[in-house]
Image 1: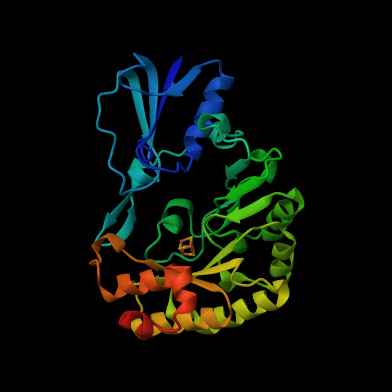
Image 2: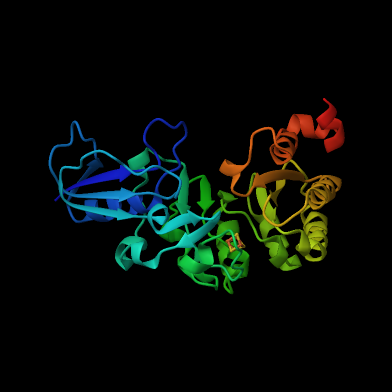
Length: 314
Ligand code: SF4
């Protein structure tokens, strides 16, 4: 068969390409069947037996050109998750999970010319069900192990772990040790749920090669859980702001005072705060929230300028 692939999020105009994992798995599986696989290019590809279109982000514009193929299959979160009234809504009908044998195949990294990084999930699902996130609805309100590391890693220098919430998985110890024992640099792409940190987990993470770790402090009401956990993590690992960033979600359910307090606590711990704005596209440029984001996320300015008031006077 002649197979075409379209990475809808990467139209070639954007700079850095984050590879589409589903397409890399589809490519690997079809090549295993003896099919020819190529990026679909309307001007040059000619007629295809099948074209897969994959879209990860709901806000990416859909592919709008004619596709010359017997069959076109669309899939990915970008097609089954939509933003409605600022919330992510999951449409089960539009979800097309990959068949088991494709989901669990070693991805074809050559599709993106990647040689030094492995991408994949060792667990799926999340028990949290945060109001702004689709993971619980799409993957289940429980974290469960789905793969061993060797399923998508074969000695690459870097590992991008895409798990939504590894620490919530009952197999966390197995997963963390596999990552630590790999000797590769591990990046928890989706961040780590600091509320579920324990001394044992922190000790294993400290043994991992990781350039940087991200936590999230989304809701102010978690202060009494998060602050002691951040302190415990710091005491065990001795990691500071060069290695630890804490995402601070603003504009969802917190006041400006609560935003500033979280940022100050993170600063006092010598970790890097990083402001993420909920429904950012609908927040006016020049608004207080956008200026807060500019102050905090520009590290040079943030560590030079001690308070938001001071920054606002600049
Ligand atoms: S903890 Fe993270 S993955 Fe889980 S529901 Fe909340 S935002 Fe989503």
